[in-house]
Image (cartoon, rainbow, N blue to C red):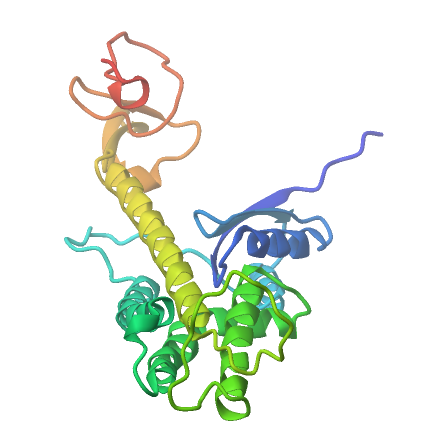
Length: 300
């Protein structure tokens, strides 16, 4: 008696909150721990492709992803009519605002720290006023992600960024309020010699602000590139065939019926007229023609 295989169901989940490849690896590992589940998480597309036993509720998969500190949802049904404008990306808009604000505030802090001739009286307190919004508001996405990962007993790239920025800022606060870095006339000079000292006269506000700004810039350009790549893929899908002439049985034999591409089923035969787009992959059962495959091969 042969053993029958259990039918499997395939799901696609949209994952939110991932900030690096290790996030995708954590989600994939968590999903694969479920009985009979095989999952693959793509960080670039922010999607999870899951093969699960038939009858498994996709909400169970979503809840498992949420236990790791991320969000998951089933893809929304495609719009019946294409929109003229791309929907706004709140994450990209937020990153742009934080990046612009951080650049404006960080540049004076870095310039003052690097050029002793520009260090006026109480310049260190002006640097603190400029760097504080960058460390708190600009770096908030990193602090938030680090806290979520900490609650779930994990560490990612955001954890390192948050620790580094916070350490530089908190030490600067200590040196300003409890050390002698806040004294009038304090200067931040460069020395080539190493001498033992308490460090209470040194501040690192330019490090905290600069690291935040540079990492924010990288995160923003990465998110923008992903959005542009997604827009290009959606544009390719838009130029595909919208309907197809399917051969279906009728009272008078077999007739051509035009139906939306989404209604095309496996095993059905359809007709491709000269100049039409081929609706989907298939096997040519009859007829001969030439197909312009330049989009795939680069030549007609």
